[in-house]
Image 1: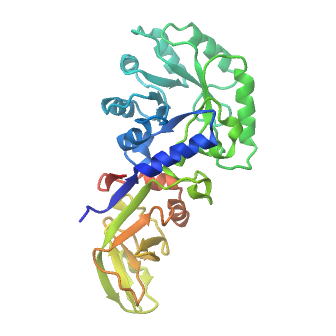
Image 2 (image 1 turned 180 degrees about the vertical axis):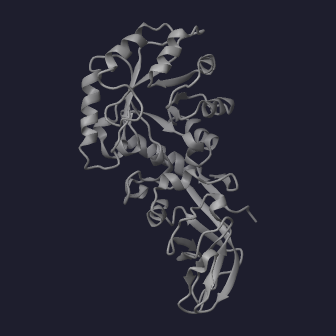
Image 3 (image 1 turned 90 degrees about the vertical axis):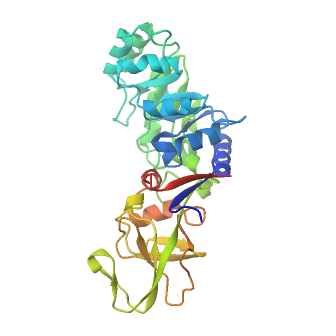
Length: 363
């Protein structure tokens, strides 16, 4: 028997999603965002699946320097970009040695570059704060910062340029168009590559696609928009989170189940106990009625999710058995739907799985 719980990752889905994103943005290169352990799908799994063939990803976006080193150690040859940049001057020689590119978004990073003496210049992406107001230089700071980087021997030329959207996952929100226009007006006539579009902008704001797109959640077959699904954009869920029934129990009307004894059966039924809980990253706050899939039918979670298991109401006529497979989300039960039941976003569900969940790469 395969170990459980486990996250089964489809190589086919990842590659098909990449191909679909190329169709959506045919004039852009693709920087596949694989931060947070490949959005829970396995950092090296994803990078090797979508980067090691003709037509694969052109580069990879990462949040941490250690992630970039892991990819290089794993034999990944594509362009690597540190989306949050570097935090220590001592990292700069390693960034150069491993041919890693870095975002520059803060004064302290410029100062470290200006004080550095490197074997060759660093490839830099200057981040503009066009309206997100989280990282990046303001529109009024841009000219001075750009000139400092142009004058710095440790910075490769030309300087690449980027921004990030606050509300691209709200297709009717006018802020995104304002950000696009502000960025385009600011960098008009400058050399260097440009990237603006995350997953949501790639799907809903084609004018923002530019030289590079940076798909994260869409690469994994998930829509970035609440109420939407990846399948609506011809994307395929790449992760199937599965476990097994470890008990099937007769349950009488009026009986409770689980910690707090707050759920009570309205009629005689059968309860199933599934080997997954918040110790595996399945949310403790999943409410009664959150669906799972067993033997082709949806059944609701009842009682509280505990550390190692959860309970589901199988129904009084159920024929399910110990050992039967349970899908928590995947191709037949969209993670976007599960997230809506729980009151969160699909990003959180796929990235918060703990090391107890075995990640298995399938064809």
